[in-house]
Length: 204
Length: 324
Image (tube, rainbow over all chains, first blue to last red):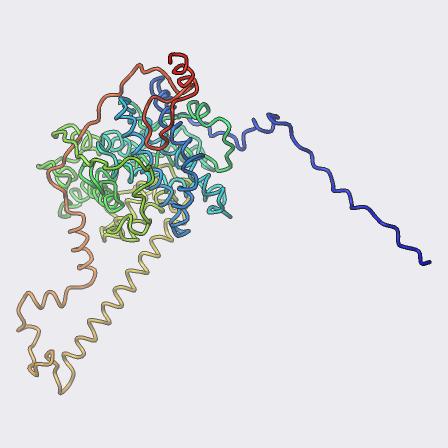
């Protein structure tokens, strides 16, 4: 009688460490927050941000996720910033209008910041879905910056009352004259400190 | 009015708790750049803050043109060159503003006119995403050149320049594009040297622009030459098929001018039409913020939301059951 080869058991898979829920890894920030010296919102503005942005973020990461992905997928890759921005601008205009109909007026001073956060979240969705890939951090910033401008444009187009033009126009003038303190004080990516203090001479 | 760019990091930590993100947030420099873009576009739109297209890229280019005109005033006057239209006049203020600083002009511009809202009511707020059409149709009238202004401006703002420098740089590029002489004293020597040393990108853009213009001029000249060759061909003058020859000096003034107008002048004429000052600027205001509203988000949001209409929260449902 021939000897049967000895049966071998299945190889034991290598182990995998499972982190317990609520471990310290969850609370670690993915990157250091940018330290800026911009003005903090008032208490009332914080409440407004909480209400508007809370609704929008709930929508982005819950009910509206698939719809947003579908919208982003419709745009050509080189126009992703435009698609992100216009989606964000349209959403923000609707939300502000809806809040206003509910008796809550949102301060214009926080609109741009809310818009930037919205753009960042939609960009995050795009990254999750693989629409943003092989981009350096600086390129991601550039994409989001462009998207924020498109968002502003779309917001003004969609908003029933638009925006008060005096603030942005004064800010543009201030930036051009080099007298906007907040900008010269803020840390920039790879910028020597002395570059920020250059002022332009006007018309002479 | 406070600053229109605020740090909302503290509020975000409450709202966005638990969302793990890998895309870095927009830096403050780009936040300021977006605000400045808005301001320049509004300046180009003549201060109209409402209505479709008021922040269109073409208005940003128009705003840059007005800034360029403003910077041209001093040098043009001092060198005896015919003066450039003052920005106040270009902005529809009426009258001439004597070499004011831009901020003063803007301040006058924004406060000295009637405030009128431009309404553009939404018709359907049920779907927060409805109406977000394809990007290609989003800006049908904006050419790729003006859209590239956004990319160039953000690129500059995201680099080593401050937003003010980026804006000055964009104004300079815009002046090159529109054929205005940049040597009107816009930059003093030290700043120009610094920018040229620090930003090769600047030169690349100008070179690219010059290359395109020279190509366009060459093709236009070749086109003109071919027409002239046909017209003055030996022995057989072509009069458009009519069989008669008309010497250019005998042609009607209008037709001769149109045929002989160089392509560069045609470009400038088109741009002048595009950036013509908008009269009757209108203003608007939004209501004052309602203060003192309590934070309700911990339980349920009493504010109706277009994005996520929800059923009453658990606390409310429980309360209702007890009452019933």
